[in-house]
Image (cartoon, rainbow, N blue to C red; front, side, top):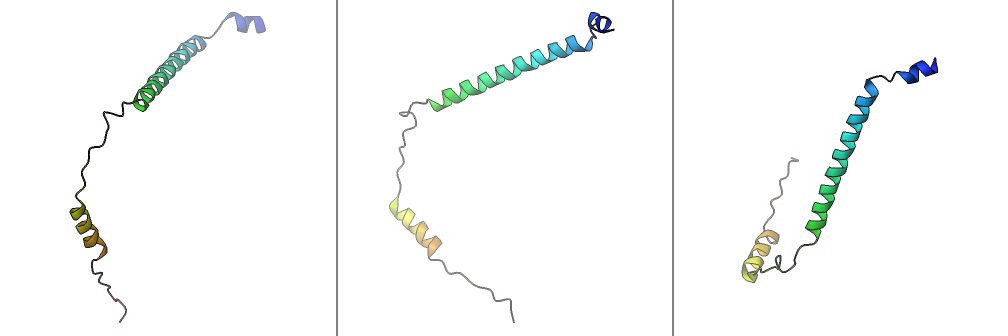
Length: 79
């Protein structure tokens, strides 16, 4: 009985094998692209991203004062 079962392989298993191999290839290809992109992104030139910002201290102080020295109105709902 075992020889009859081994002699005739169902069509499902070769198709399953092809699908699994294809999916494994796609997963490996995708992970390879993702990790190579992360490697490229982590190794950037710092001269390109050099900060050239100029902060206006007067405007910063005015914004700080406006925010932290504002009057807070408390509403009393209990009568």
